Length: 259
Ligand SMILES: [Zn+2]
Image (cartoon, rainbow, N blue to C red; front, side):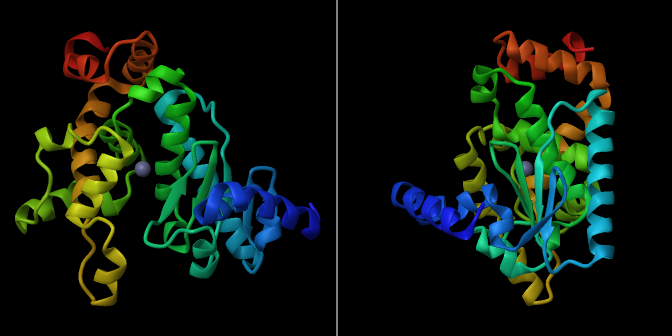
């Protein structure tokens, strides 16, 4: 796309979508905004050298292998946009997060999210959503979606060890009952804000350890479930969701009903 065409497109769309919409539109024209295409599904910030590009390709392969291991196949093929500088990430309207998945199959990685764990986390969302009917996706609770992503991606930041540290230090964290109330994305992000999972840039600047009480709680909840039901259980779970059963109903009876 030429710069003129891109500018006209952005101008017309920005009038409709406003500023955040304008930043979102950039994911559809990454080369216009300083990213180079490395493979059909991977765009990397143009200033990244060959070694960095290779590392990101390896990250992508490892993340895909993780999704494949969990599901037995990979149905989603997200377009990954990788930033090696904070200014690149901020140009897409993001700041404190490490990575972000968009509902349309695009995944954006910050320089702090350039590892297989954070890509696999976002890919878990993309893969699960791609396998759900519209209604099943509509009723999917955020705690389950996030907990599954945390469990599959094995990020040390959200690990069982991190959860144990939060317990040992008596850091405020959601109870299981409270976790189940984080159903919509806005409820999830309210909790993330309330418990301070989104304040790790500030903590880092002060030399304090990172803290992710909400993500760690979701991982702590889903990890034993994933280990217990395995691949067949996960696929059976998705089938039942698509058949109109509620997550809670299937989840609570998972030990008996989902094998
Ligand atoms: Zn997530």
